[in-house]
Length: 597
Image (cartoon, rainbow, N blue to C red):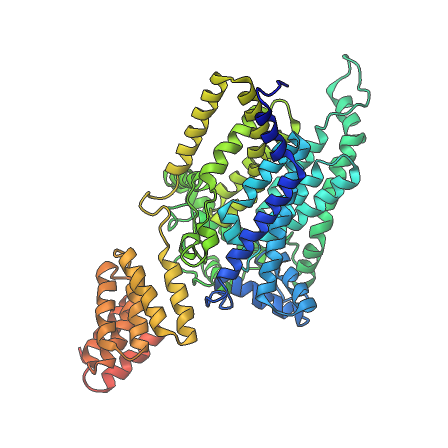
């Protein structure tokens, strides 16, 4: 290794490599996450849970109350997080602040594991820089504040990677257990299991090998019976040990052998159906936008199309076939969507889920603190991988994991929180670029510096250019305005609720959603004339907006115009035949003698 040109060069590298710097990084990680969590305490989103967060919390409360096995069907969604929450509730009670602080601890713990992995592969400087990248990765800070499984999942996966790098068979067993548990929070991680087994089987060994004349089969047998085989077997045994209780439970309650969850086919269809042209999450037209109804709606449609009752496993297989048939019949469309999914994996933009990171930045100073996203992390990780992949076998494991996990997202669909699983590995790879950069600096190697700078710029350009339309990138998603408005309405704070909807309509004038939501709010607060204007604007943007004609009829009823109300209800029934509420209201309007055709 070349010596530094000046004492200052060496002092700076030593400072970054020190334990004190690592402790400061962990403290920064904790401070940023705590600041974000505490900034949200005054908002109704802190206790007013929606979508998956509501479902996990309700599920955990049932488990904590004694419903350990649940209903008579196999698990539809990954079960570990609600059981994890339930155990926490039994010990300390249902305190959502403490749950989020537990997420904070998991995030800081993951940051520490990133440092350990990086130090093992590339030394203290690489480990510390990798930990810093993870500490200031904005989407991870945001996601840690959600009542959702990602913090637990990322921690378990990073623990599995760290344990896999240890040299004992016992550690490889523990790595399998950690990966199996992680797969109970994110089912597509099961696709990583073969990579781990093959990596252990290919492990270099000092044991004597057969001579040059030995065939491949004796060499394979020798590897299987030696340390590599024992490591791979221990890893696989650990994975099976972790998921076996779930498999047993699924069979015990339903009589079906379902490995972990029965919803894989439905998720596959969600990402690969004619209504999904983006590669992200798009609502399936016949499935209600609420996770508690997802399995029921998918099952009902599958049984109607199949013409017979279906078990949970049969329903999943049905939707796999439906999606594959669509891909086979429309290969061009499927290829375009797959490319868009690749873009969503690479993009610096964070695809929102229940809540939008950019929207919550309005309320959380921690999210406005200068930090990094995928547009910075991905180029650094690419550089770190490029300069170490030939010399470090462990790097090939990390790169292989990132590649396989990314392919699993392309097979299904992409959310911001889905790709967070690769961020610890990318952080380690980014940290590995630091020692190489120090060497280049010390050697004053201009050619390498310029080449690496061009490479970094190229990858960053791809990340910032990929993903959705540039006009949407970093914009605040309209759904978050509406969701927060609804939570304010539940509190009775109607002025705050309406103010949010006004902001949403200003930021998204071409979206029908905020006008519909404000029309509903104004109707609820006794202002049918104002509601009418909003609903007309909504329908001018989207004449088929769900339930907009129904609520328009209710506004006309509020204004004492049952004839116009009846016309609106008929328009609703023309779009949704058999709509129960519209039928009842239409009959009521016609009975007053003013709703005739």
